[in-house]
Amino acid sequence: MKKILFVFSMAAMLMGMTACGNKSNADASAENSDESPAMKLLNSVEFSEEGLVSMIKTPADQPLSDDEYEALWLAYSKVPINQGKLELETNPISKARSTIMKDHKRPANASAIQEKLLTNPSPQVRGMAMGQFSSLFGLSKENVAKLTSILAEEKDPFVIKEGVKALSNELKKEEAAKFVLGQVKSDNKNIRKVVAYAVGNSWSIGVPGVTDAAKTLIADKDEDVRGAMLNNVGDLEDESFIPELVKVLNDDKQHKLHDKCMNSLYKLWYDFPFHKHTSKAAYDATIAYLSKKPRTEDVPAWNSIGELRTQAESSFDAWKAKATYFKVDEYIKLMTDIATDANANWLGRSGAIDVIEKLGTKADLEKVQSAIKANTADDKQKLVLSAIEKKLK
Image (cartoon, rainbow, N blue to C red):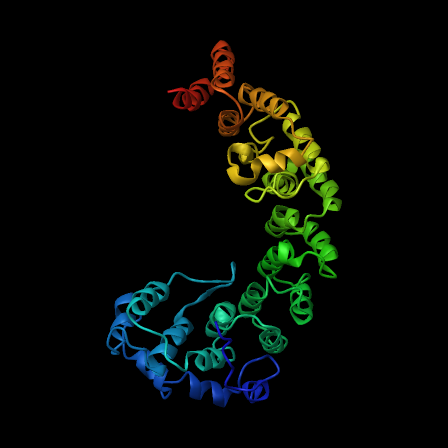
C-alpha cells in the first residue's frame, strides 16, 4: 500500500496555534462555529445515531463529501470527557460511523481532513483524531515527527493520553520515545497508565530509558498504574524484573496485584501463544507462589492458576524440549494439590482442574475427584466436583 502523502506542511499546520497547542480564539470560533460548513451540517440534525446517519445525503457506494466526513469527526466535540477516566462518555458516534461507512467510501481528501483535525480547537476532536492517526497514516518516521511536534505543545490530558496510545508501538523512534517516556511522571494517573502499556510492550525492548521507566511505574503511587506495569513488564523479556514481581507476590496485602505479576511471569517462562521464551527463574517463582500455604480465598489469585489450560499445539512440543525445567508430572502434582485444597478459592481450584485435563489423563482427574469427595469438610466440594464431572462425561 502506497504511503499517503500529507497535503499540508508542518509549518502551515502549526500556524496560528497558541502555546497550549490550540488555535487562536478567532480561528477556533470560525472552524467550530455554526458558520463552518461541516459544523453547520452537524448542527442540522439531532445528536443521535439516527440523526447522524440521516445527515449523510451521499448515495451508497459513493465517497462521502468532505463536509459529511468532517462533520462525523466534529461530532465528538459534543461528547463530554469523563475526567476521572480520561475517556469520552457513552455516545452514538461509533455506531453511526459504522453504519455510514458500511455503505460509503472515504472522500479523496480524507487524509487532509484528518490532519487538519489534529489541531482542532476541541480536545475531544483532537484526541479522537490522534487516536486514529496511526491507522489512517501509518507511523513512518516523518509521521512520528509530525505527531510529536503537535503533542509537544499539547496541554489537554485527554489528547496527551490518546497521543501516547497512538505512539505506543513506536518507541524505537527517538521522538516517540522522548514524548512517551516524558509522561512517566505525569500528574494524571490515566496518562501514566497508558505509558505503562507502551513501556511494557515487546516493541519497546532495547529502547534506552524503558527499563528505568518500568521500574518507576512499578513503584507508582496508583494501584491501577502499578497493575498495568506489573501485568506487562514480562513482555520486555527481562529477568531482572523477577525480584520486583516476587516482592509483590510475597505480600498478601497486595493480593489484588498478584494476577498481574503472575501474568508477567508466565510470559517469561511459558510465553503463550508463541512458546518461544524460556526462563527457569520465572518458572521457579511461579511454582513458589502457587505452592505457598496456607492457601486462602485471595492467595493464590484464582485467575493466576489456570494459564496452562491453553497451549499452541504447533509450537508447544518444541518449547517443552527447550524448557527443561518444566516437568509435566510435577506440574500436574501441584495442580492436584491446589484442586484438592479446601482453603483455596474454588474458581482457582477449577482452573487447576482445567490444567490437569489439558496436561494429564482421565485417571488424574479421577484421582482428584476421589480426594475431594473424601473431604467432607470442604464447603466448596459440590462446585469443584461439578467442574470435574463435566470433564469426565
